[in-house]
Image 1 (cartoon, rainbow, N blue to C red):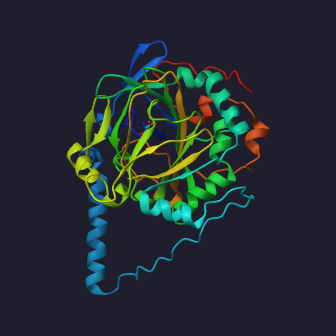
Image 2: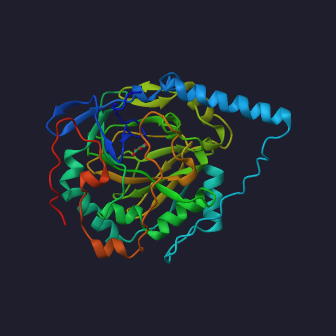
Image 3: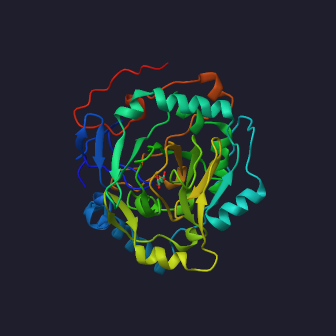
Length: 375
Ligand SMILES: O=C(O)CCC(=O)C(=O)O
């Protein structure tokens, strides 16, 4: 795939990004619909990924495999005794950690809801930031659902010193992500703000986030975790997310395109929903709740038909040893260690918006980076 590539968003997913030496260059084939609205689609992320992988890399991997096979036959191959990595621990105090029961629920159901993870004051700061940060508005992408409604989001790859970064870098959240990845060191895959507008915010089709992340070169679905942080109350009426319990145990389902989004093969989604114990659960969240979700958990959401906003931020943590394979299609940043901050930092920093040149956001073509207004 060429260095510049599209990107579109689809459920849970990302968008493209390409590393060019030290910087990421983003280009896209998006069309500007209005001054502030960019339309995305996700077909280029899906299927056919093997064919789009650079052929030399496939050939080189085949040569390596042949060499390993010869060594195994000759009996002088290295013993493949790789120790497990030592469990990661943040060095700062955590004011909240996952209980044994919460970890068990995550492993059993593919998600767990942790009530009141963040305080009302912290969420008030986050909400004000989302409302006042003009980057969220000018850089948002609009993705069509299967019925033509649009749902909006703003996404970036690098954690900064802004308010969102204080959430993503907070000791408790980083440690929890590590615990759910079996003790790996988490790094930031991306953060996105999901903006479901009153009366018009569109649906998200049924999908697994790993449906995309696999295509972006990730190997291990257990080593990437979403932390869904509720800004507004998430209700049936305003289009809360719905999750298929235990669906993370099925493995990755093939995805196709529905509207401007990618969705999992509907026949398999229906079959999954009919399995015993695979209930469809409404993710009803209150502001400050965090839901952790496995990357293979099937999820969707309905349109927002209410008078109320439904805004969440989702921080996706990948693990150090799950960085994208070399030469993969764009969309996942390489490992970069998280500069963990104390949980109290959110209130210390207060309202502070994004700086696109640091966060590496998806920029509409021709957009000049404006200076941040908030500080
Ligand atoms: O916010 C939602 O309703 C769904 C978002 C989603 O599915 C995703 O970001 O993967």
